[in-house]
Image (cartoon, rainbow, N blue to C red; front, side):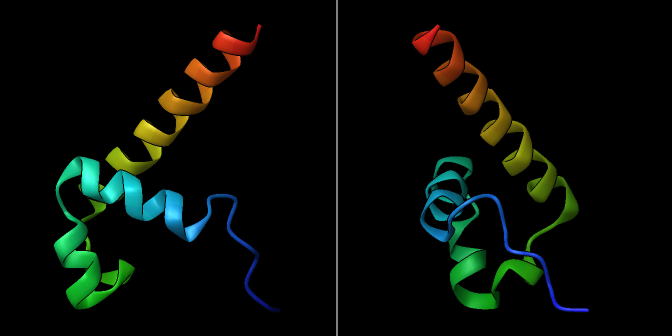
Amino acid sequence: MGRKRGIMSEAFKEELAKELGFYDVVQNEGWGGIRSRDAGNLVKLAIQKAQSQMIGKG
């Protein structure tokens, strides 16, 4: 089976990584080099941003 397409764009993930302070790891090692805690924080921040966008448009 092929890999599923990601929901988040690469640019958005990079923006979040910069905001969370681990973009340097992504640049040097790729997404596989980040800690699971950082990955969780990235998802959490993405959800928070999506929710605030939905509330703002409501």
